[in-house]
Each structure stands twice: as structure tokens, then as C-alpha cells.
Length: 135
Image 1 (cartoon, one colour):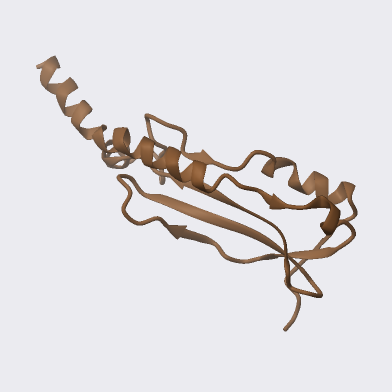
Image 2: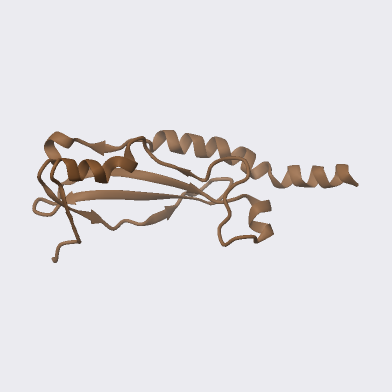
């Protein structure tokens, strides 16, 4: 009986087992923080609304969220990065413990190195953040 239960649990985690390699590859491919402090200093920027998009062909549901900051006057990109999110596989979603459970076998989130300090850097070099400019 216990062997059957453990076999069933292992089978329901197989999607996460394969998804972790997909997630790792996506994280490596999207791990770049594009930002040059020297050319960005003193500008006024806004966050371009792009939102999350589903990533097709993955073993578990995954999304990518693009953050792009543009210069208010020129509209040229000043900084950008992407975040990758994963949800649980079949077992985690079937349990229904939370609205969007995280995978059991790997972290559900990845981001480029330095993205967490970006707003601090903006402040240090005199970048002003504002809302989306009127058209």
C-alpha cells in the first residue's frame, strides 16, 4: 500500500522534475539586467506596462514578466529586465492548498542579479520615476 502511494506521488511530481530543467534554462536565457548608469543618470523615467505572459510548451505553468523603464522625453529604454515565475505541477495544483502554489521541487521565481537594487541605484544617480506620460 505504501509503495503504491509513493509510486503515485512520484508520478505526479514527474512534471516538476522535467520542468525544473526548463525553468533553469529560461532563467539563464532571461537573466540579463540591461542598464547603463552613466547614460541613465539624471533622467526622468516611467515604467512601460507590459505585464505577464504565459510561456508555452512548459511542463508546468510558467510566466515571464517584463519590466521596461523608458525616458519620458525620448521614449528610449533606460533599464529593463525579466522575471520568470513557475507554478506547481499537477500534484500541487490538485491539492488546492493555495490559489497558485509553488513547485515542490524548485524555486518558483528567478530574476537577474542586481534587479533588487535597481531603485536604490536610480535614486543614487538622480533618476526620477514618474507615471506613464499623457499621449
